[in-house]
Amino acid sequence: MNQAQKRAHWAAVIEQQQQSQLSIKQFCQANGISYQTFFYWSKRLHSTDTVQTLQPIVFNEQSHSSSESVVLFFTNGIRAELPAALNTTQIKRWVDALQ
Image (cartoon, rainbow, N blue to C red):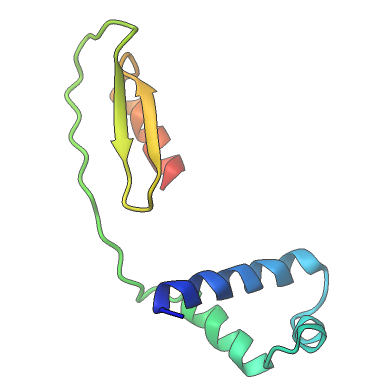
């Protein structure tokens, strides 16, 4: 299991615990998970030293016909197709929501 897979696995485990209505200790015991390992990954996934990359998006606000669209590709694999008639504020809201 590579690092990205480990992160995804533990993010899912932590989400399951939060949804379970069990305390962390109860959840770990019920699922055969080391209490210390759970906290290690919880801290690691929520630490602020995670590398974040910024991807600049340049907008030129112009008048477009209603049939045109803007397609945005994010590094996390999301592809968003938005009407080109949206103004830059509306597009920014979508970008913020999708990241």
